[in-house]
Amino acid sequence: MSRFAVPVLLFGAAALLQAEAPHQNIPLWEAGKVPGAVGGGPLHEPFLTAFLPPKKERNGSAVIIAPGGSNIMLMYGVEGIELAERFNDWGTAAFVLTYRLEPKYKQEARSADGHRAVRLLRTRAAEWKIDPERILLAGFSAGGHLVRSAMLGAGPGDPAAADPLDRLNSKPNVLCMVYGPGVPSPDDKLKDYPPTFLLSAAWDRGAAEGTVKLYSDINKAGGVAELHIYQRGRHGFGAATTSPEYGPWMDSLKHFLGLNGFFGGNKK
Image (cartoon, rainbow, N blue to C red; front, side):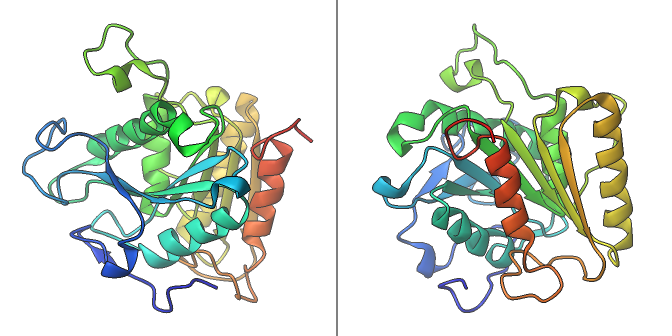
């Protein structure tokens, strides 16, 4: 159960609650240097909020969490804080991504935010005691769309780039999309996807059908994917720690991650 009793709706990503003050906010770019920005402040300057387990408990894994909210707000509680705390219990350093939202920004900007977040973790891996080759990008609903759009342009950086971060690889090592399979694109290179965990509830018809289709397409392309469709449920269940319908889903995710060596050691 989350230490924060009430889920937080971060409308427009305008600010974090005072309860979050102990957790470090890390800008993805310096102020005034965000590509494509049409203003200043938290609505225009994306950032990560770090949730770090004690150093002695870290196993080198890291997750970037992209909450949902229809691209107009962020469900920062059930699709951010609660998930970060669960990952911390597993020894994983968690970073909740506050990305750019509608109507000022489109998916291209959110894709850039996803790329930058992965690169930022890699450049500061030693500081946070994480393995730069064990980074999970997890998205919920609209955040799942961010994950898929970020995969379109993910890959090696530009060795001649003026910004050192832009020289790093932006492709995550594992993906997770929960009730948000993203929008298909003719440029999708599904065979190049890293291991991908997919989850929806059957009653959430649109997300469920899209998730099944994405699994089938990845599987046909020769990629690695695992699919879970719960027979009941709804959209937006988040961590769902005590839910009778889909409470076990994070245990399934942990098993999937372990099979793919996310927590260290050999793949099982």
